[in-house]
Length: 422
Ligand code: NAD
Image (tube, rainbow, N blue to C red; front, side, top):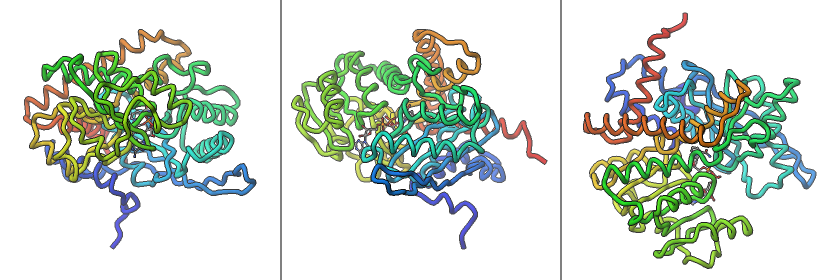
């Protein structure tokens, strides 16, 4: 028999739900409260008819999931990817809730997605799709209701179109409706780099914790997009050698270190890192198991799984992507104490923290310098890192369980004190 929540059936949702169940058990949350905390408050599915450049009309599926509304507006990215489905978006929304709570932000989690392949669409088609998605979402979003940001396959331009569509509807400029938009229309300095720089900062803290010198370390990064590329540059600035990197078209390897500045030029000119002359090609699977000090999955979910978790050869697993490690892999990693895991909701939280700063600046129409932004960001990340590490050591639990339990507990406490209406 189908249950009400079967609508979320998806391997990524099953993974987020399993993590939640483990944390709920650890925290001994009342059984009656668990479903209320786990399942999203609202989910929207919309059909998006878009005129293609050929003159044909194609209908795309769009989603938005708002996980909980207890602490403030919901907050989370919008993803354009061919495999986007409601259950995956719901899992990402749930993780956003725990992440925002871990960082102490006054938000619930949300996520959006459109099933499309942005690499195969023209700029005009992407603009029409983005505007149509925003238009369909207008009844459900607002600066005090739900605020979007970029994620895989979307960027500052996408946010600018969203802000323009929403503002046209409102009749005045509403910059606070999205974050991660260009600085020229109310974006925050440092937002574009914030996720990757945060990843770099936390890896540096982890290196310090396990007594490794960044200048003696090597790193492998999966994904050369907004997060992966900035994280790689940030590591290189700390003195780390980047020996492997990949994007959707394949991987590259060079034991001596990849020249990121040359790679960036090549990627900009070719829309892909493939064919870069300064490194050898390597398959994605092999890339993840290369011996290195720091492994940074910065692309998709479920990349470290039961099949490869026993074979990864790093000292630090820095989860820049959302959900890159499955619970089955966690069981294996729990038996490999030589690997220090920086769990996703901590590792990539720099993005939502600076999104929060951007929203605050927009609401006040008062803008900060880049050094104010970065200084405030690193303070918040530092505090979350220390709290997570202390809890992990105190209770002898994994860094993931520690981070999740801090986040889940804050949401559970807020729900309890607000009570159940009516
Ligand atoms: P992006 O679209 O800018 O980049 C994604 C990169 O991953 C691209 O280089 C793409 O080619 C690569 N990729 C896709 N499939 C791949 C595969 N099978 N193998 C190797 N590489 C592959 O996206 P992004 O914003 O950098 O997001 C990456 C991850 O970080 C996602 O999990 C996202 O949810 C997470 N994240 C992003 C932000 C943000 O601020 N953008 C914040 C927090 C978390």
